[in-house]
Length: 303
Length: 301
Image (cartoon, rainbow over all chains, first blue to last red):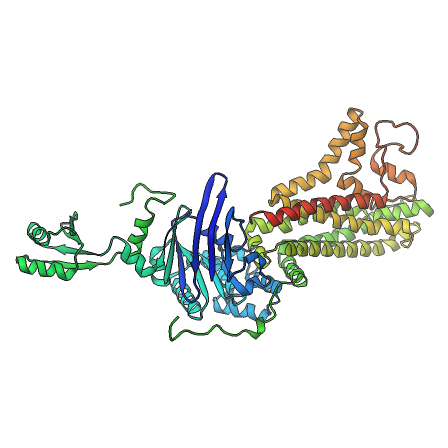
């Protein structure tokens, strides 16, 4: 379990993390979602004792990371791909880290095998692709067979097969009762991997809830309808809590009622329907809604 | 979480896994020998140190007259410490690189994640650097000394490696080189950048003494010349200077007579001997080290 309490970090005049509190539970995958510059990596670095918070605490199973005697056994972290000397081979990098804890070399071979690095393990890391660097980072995280895993953007740079592998690995590790905390700015990735999501924007927690709740909470559900007689349908649906918007392509977006209710209303009014599609807000929409005021770098072309 | 939940595996092979200082030393040794450029630097240093003892021996004493006593000891000590000037520069660069390379590549975060208290890993790194540097320097210098001894003998120079006036400077050279490596390591830890660290270290060793001395002489400022004697390279030079006779030291310090008489304002009043030089340089290394270690503990990585 990771507990973050009133954590703040200031870089110069910029408040990168602003009074952040949340808990990461064992046995599930917790996603850490937010736009670039939201403070996700900074928060993770503070958990790992690399950056000192200006205020607040971060503990892992009740202890500060810097107080751990066997940190690699407790926590495995992928903080950034290639936190590795470029002149050293992947094998030697793992071997040196294992040596700090007296972890046997056989475990090094094991994680190299698990992450599919056999063919490049003796090569220097400087020549690694981003994906290979990520695999090495994950091998480092797994080295001490830790109870808690903290993975910053683990799927970054991975090919589709690698993405699937990380997703399955995270789910498997959580199913063993471990605490799995991974960050991403890819909403779709979270929707498929995480059970619980903490959304961060401009250093503040915008949402901290099970993924289902995040999805259903975002603008509720809506129904897309196509009909040759939209005016009649709008009249038939008219009710205080129902809103109907017409899209550019002529379809109607109805919210406040279910698809069944729209169909029944259309039948009663004798309106012909060409399409009737219930729409569940995607995590992507939910995320954009949550963070639209909190993105650091906004592009002008959006929507 | 669910009925299908697997259990975390028991790992008897990881049972005793925790950080200890000897393990950190082992890890730093693996790291040192697994960077190709470091290994090459040490190899080159090893070969050059031997060559720089043997090659001068081949051309010394062209007149062929017998050289004995203090003159012979002075010659032997000098020939076997020529390489120290070069070695010191190589390890100055190595000492910076060994730590700035970690900051530059991001490796330092892996290092500190494995040892979040940081000081153990930093001490271990310094220890491995110092030990490796001393062993390689001493081995190459002594191989050079024993290789050049028969050559010098054949050129009518009386070689007595057992004379303290001879073996102390030869040994002191390796001590100096080791302390320079540690000083560079401290500076690299402070600056955390390769270019800046190397510039500061080499500047301190090579440039600052010349500037201080030039200004001191030009402006007749005696205290500048005296302060100069306490700079790492000047104090450290006493560690491998031949001190069998007073003139040898003074000449090395770059000026006329120093002992007694009125100061002539072109040479320092203060003249450190070998042991004083050692303590001064050691003190400087410790001082830089304390600042570096304190900041390492406190700074964001």
